[in-house]
Image 1: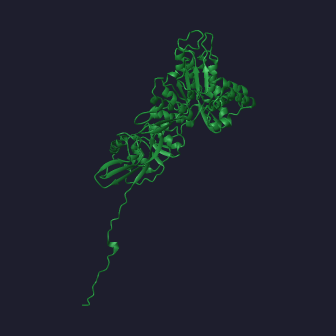
Image 2: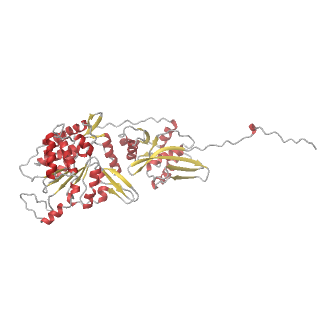
Image 3: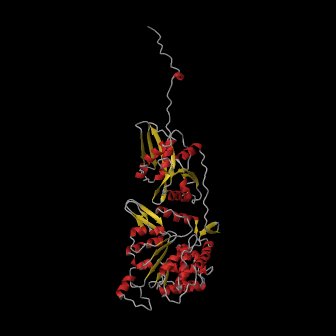
Length: 526
């Protein structure tokens, strides 16, 4: 009964064929979406899992991204790609951020095409809309996206459509790899040859360099100041306004040349540096217009019947850009100023002060840059003949007062220069051309930049006014007397100093002298 029981020997592990667990590849590519006017980085991920064959996109994707599934399928099939019998899931991370735009097509298609290959390239952005034949196309969001990413320091290189290079090449500091078809993009990822194949853009405009920063300008005078007869005071005021980008209001009888002067100021404005040219172009893209990237500042002149939404931007579902933001770095011209609605005029106070437009809606809260020069023209009364020595005014005192009361003191306090236009005379002649005035503006601009001013005189902050708007002894006494005599507000004092600084620059004075300040005070609102 003491039989020995053989429990057996353990099997040799070498003879057991254990199926190695195969790790699934999760590839990622980087893209972006616009949230308001700022770009947010998006990580596009793709997985292929067992299950009923299908294709889904998750991560709060808008309808245009959901439609990308059909474009992606067609583009891959026409390029001889065979879809595996697996469930394809594309995730757009972070998942709590709403995404929109057709520029995500290329990233999604590349992840599907490269599902058996590990993509290890980090910091490479991929943008492009796909045609059904696999052609890589551009989209209206592409320029604002890339520019915003560059301004945030988030992008160094990117695969982009070849047809977008005409405007993307203006953005310096980013290596662009241009592709024309989906096949090209796939071959690029396989070869891992991520070298830029686009040359940086060089501006054709005239330029000069101050403290290693190039400034660009153009001598294009579509309409000339030489055509404006007489009005020497108004032309001098417009020169000062242009040189410092000061807000400017002209009052005068109908036909005296207010609109003529306003439309000619745009040709004599100060030069632009590269970031300003790109910022103007960004706003034009947001408006659906392809810019020409010229070194000319924009001018916008909405009609007085324009709604508040069209002037400032808005919309129920998405807050679109308005006239004020489209005038960024340029002129916003209001002709017949008192005829604009009270709501528009009062709402304009914030952009004039903060240089930004805030739009708050249920679905969107957007902030647009609006660093503008405000120019306005108005008649002295409803019939326009109040200041005339020849024609008699037909308005009653009540009508005149009601007309003038449409402009509140807080609104008028934000305007630097006020000019009452002279009546037209048959003997008046043109005495100065736009070319001459532009030379004066350039001279004043160089003085401002050599003082290391980041802003032009009309846009100086309180701290910068103390640093740059320095009065000499006589000018300081005149300023003190003016404050007591006219009861100037703090904003009015700052305005007079800024105008005095621009006049001093035009006169090549290091400090604001007596003559500069007296002229500045002459442009005060009476």
